[in-house]
Image (cartoon, rainbow, N blue to C red; front, side, top):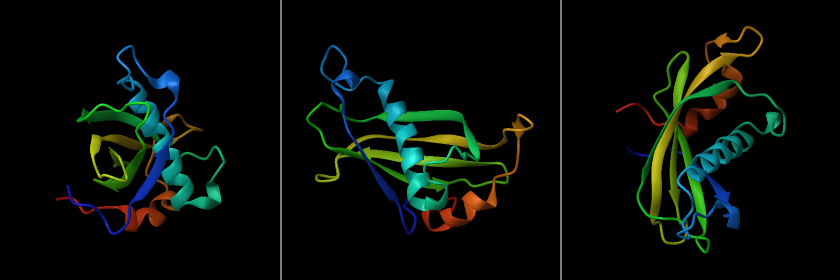
Length: 141
């Protein structure tokens, strides 16, 4: 997949507790990194809601392809951008990589669905979040 005009790189600090018995980051912990990336992306792209509990979408699916193990000494970032934007959903794409070498550790996406917390139902995506994300969105191929 090609990249959009802009991406956001969210740095991740690897904690000792993230490691499994073999000294790699546990596969389930990658999804915590993706969660951190979603928050970092929001804080970068829509800073006026940074630090607030204003979330306009929820995770419907997660997909991740593991390419190389992450170890404690690695420096990593999650490169973030959006695609497949529809009326009520979009893909939050992530590439976990070493920013110094460019080595990819994993690649995947989360399908995000607009959600109204008052009604507890799926809702159209909120323009207050989606409009500022345009430069970070790749057109569907």
